[in-house]
Every structure is written in C-alpha cells, then in structure tokens.
Image (cartoon, rainbow, N blue to C red; front, top):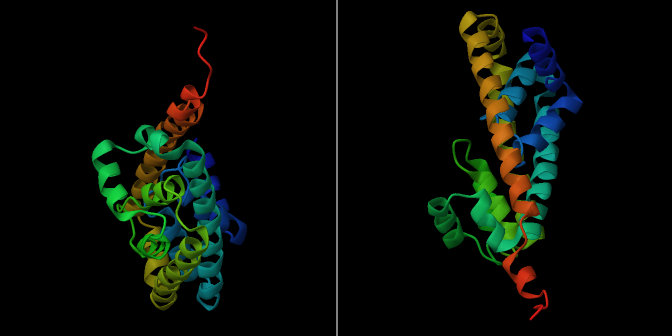
Amino acid sequence: MRAFFYSLLGYFLTPWGIILMGALDSSLIFFLPLGIDFAVIILAARKPELFWLYAILATVGSVIGAAVTFWIGRKVGEHGLTLLIKPSRLERVRNRVGAHAGISVGALAIIPPPFPFTAFVLASGAFGGNPWAFFTTLAGVRVVRFLVEGGLAAIYGRRILSWMQSTVFQVAIGILIALAVIGTIVSGIAVLRSTRRPRKRDLESVPSSQ
C-alpha cells in the first residue's frame, strides 16, 4: 500500500500530474491541503530552469478544477449550498459573493489553505457570479502565487530536496495522504447528496395530485 501511494505521488510530480493536481485542488471531491503548492515547489526544486512552466501548468489545472466547481454551484443553486457549506460559513460567504463580485472573489485565490476558497467558487456559481471576471482574476492571481513559490524553490532547491529524504518529510506525506483519503470521501458523499436532492423550486413546480 505504501508503495502504491508513493507511486501515485510520483505521478503528480510530472507535467501532466501537476495539471491534474491543480484541477483536483480546486474541486469539491478532493481534499489535500497545500497539495498543489507542494507539487510546484518540489518540481521547481528538481528543475529550477522550468519553475515558470510548472507555475503555468498548475494555474491551468486550477482554472479547470474551479470551472467544474463553479458549474456545480450553478447546478445545485443557493438551496443546495446548505448541504455543501456549513451554515455559519455560508453566511460569511454570502456577504462577499454576488453577481458582480467576480473580481474580488477571484482575487481570494492568492490566499493559501486553510482559507476555504472552494466555498467561494461554489457560491459564485450558485449566486450567478460573472464567470469571465472571476476566471480571469483567478488565473492571474494563481499564476503569481505559483511563480513566487516556484521561484523560491528554484533558489533553495538543494535544501528542499535534502529535506525530502528525511523521516519527517515521509511521515508528513503519510499524514497528508490519510487526510486526503478521508477528506475526499466525505466531500464526495456531500456532493452526491446535494446533486440528488430535489431543489425546492423544482418540487413546487410539480403539479399537485389533489
């Protein structure tokens, strides 16, 4: 099992793998805090001359994943958000998200976890946010974030690669993998429940038998 997880980790540390990681990182059904950031940093440390390419690929993946999350928000609507976002958090998100808040919400992508950015993406879709403004801003701030991370990794690459050989790193990876599995299962169940549950307005549109 351990060999399987490490081989899976090795796949994500490839050009195609980092796109997939970026997409999963911005989706509802995958949970791995700082996963995409670690991938950018490790790849840039291995090949410093390509740090800019890894930043672009990670951004492409992030936009793809966010687009899927945005579409799910449109599908479940405001009523379905209550099954995907905690009521206390939903109220805070509601106050910042609106039809004309695409730029301000997209700019939040610069903030790393534990900031609940996916909740804002989901709510932007549900509340009818402007997709063009949102995704343009999202791509811009994400590429800046990954370029900074990749650039620093290119400079301090030797220290990072040395740390990867330590027991502390291997234990940390094991913990992150366990969190990813548990969080992904919980998130997947929540998404399935929200998409299968009829919306209130759909129920109201069904003719009464009486």
